[in-house]
Length: 221
Image (cartoon, rainbow, N blue to C red; front, side, top):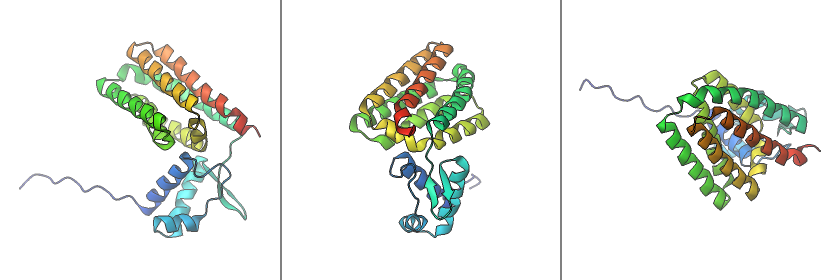
């Protein structure tokens, strides 16, 4: 046969597996801000050596999700309210622009994907599955951003999101916050479908503002 065989899927490296595992521990709240990250324990859980775990932690340190402290090792980064507010300000500047670019390029396929993700978030909210809601929420926003076809902008925004992952689970433990997020997503999509881009941008600004306000008393210690 002359047909080309599909290339085999690449297996994730031990470092990639460790990186995603630690990201999940942080995003789910199982590793809280200031928590010490025990490399040997993680390596044992993953069935690998400490080296890929350490390399994964260096990547997370560059992203701002963990920090290294002498004599204590790696810890999950704790943000001050000022740091969180500044992170969300930078997000607003980038996200408002990318949504304006993306809005006219959203097609039926992306809208169908957004509807699926909103349904998944509402189902996860009803059962209190915080991790599933966080994952669907991320996919929801990046489905919109992806329509802009500006991968470097997306990468910067993704890094900003990752730097606050440790706090997202705190926000989603509140059922009222989860319900508000779901309502806000519906409003954002309705504005985009109506072609009212500035209303969608305004809804997104309020959406981020509610998250910062809800976390303020947890951060300003």
